[in-house]
Image (cartoon, rainbow, N blue to C red):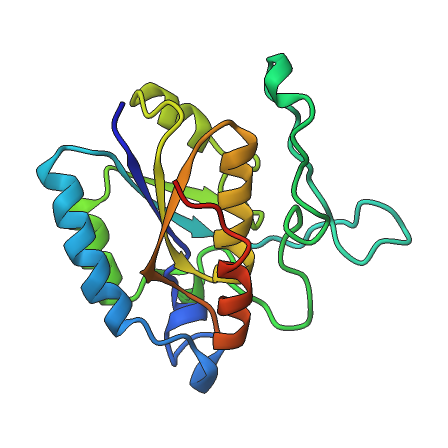
Length: 204
């Protein structure tokens, strides 16, 4: 079974000075250099690559007392999945707050030019998500099944390590998929946050 590469949320609002984060944006020059090499290797082997982007909508809360809307995944069929824990409330949620990120049809939701070039050259599919996890209310799991990816491994790249990448990665485990993280291919806005998250990740 082939591996697959998932490239998450390399959008202007996170990685460009013209986006919501402005001067606090996440620099990705070294990430793109590393990711281009990784994509070329995947393409040479005809392994699937999926670019994933966010569009954050104004979501209603799950209950009047909750601060965030939450979508927990339903357990896949099979006894082996019934005791697998879901993501916590934060990682099962979506972006909320006064600062808007990746509004539909906005400049912030677009890929910056260098990422657009990467996606055009290498990505087999682009998936749009409305939640932190790339698996929540999308066809990503089905797309992976159709390409015989099976249990993986999945390679994760993108931003941010402590939110959307971590949420998607742990949901992949929930679906019975193994995963691999390459330190050169994911970023967060805070190095100390990234180090803490990397300590939680499982490696094949």
